[in-house]
Each structure stands twice: as C-alpha cells, then as structure tokens.
Length: 141
Image (cartoon, rainbow, N blue to C red; front, side, top):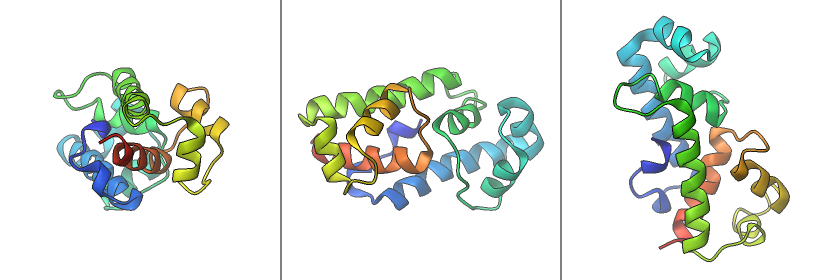
C-alpha cells in the first residue's frame, strides 16, 4: 500500500511518487494492461503510461483501484482509508495542524484544501499524496 513505502520521510515528493509508480507498475506487469483496465476502471491512457514507466496524473482512488487488483492487497476503499489514516496519525504523532503542514509544503495548497483532501472531501492526486506523505512522515519521527 502507498503508506507502507519504506523511509518515506527521507524521500522527496518525486522519489516517493516514483515508489508509488513502482507499486502500480508491478500490478500492471502481473495482470496486464487489459486486466488492469477491466478490473480497476482506470482509463487506458493512464494504465498504458504506468506500463511504459511514466507517472501519469492519477487520483488516490485510481491508484488504489489498481493496487487492489493484487491478491496481496485489501480492497480499494481500504487502501484509500489506510493512506488517509496514515496521514492523520502522522499529523497527530508529529503534533502538526493543517497550517503547519501548509507551511511545511511551502503553500503548495492551503490549509483548508489539505484538511479536505485528507478527509476525502476533495480529490487527492498521487502527487499530492506524495507531497503530504513525505512531509508528515518527516515530522512524525
């Protein structure tokens, strides 16, 4: 799952996204492009981009739908919830509020957006997840 990337606190957002992409690519390699499209509902061009080693724009839900195809992973909803819970627990452990996270990610998006993305009220991309995940993990030590 996305939140289980080793040493996330030591990786840049781009490196962390690369690790997510590696997880997705492993599923595409194992199940094939057609199998992933059919099972996940993710658009063909995104799945093909993953297969080619690219990093397409993809939501947390889309990435979770791909990961959930693997028999070793829980369903997509559980993957999404685990990722969000990991962020919230990291904020608690690191004694971070959304304003501190906003400052820590150099205002890439505002505190309200951060809160809504973590709570699932706004869509979160994997790039945004990587940015939040890396920063929050670095502070939760």
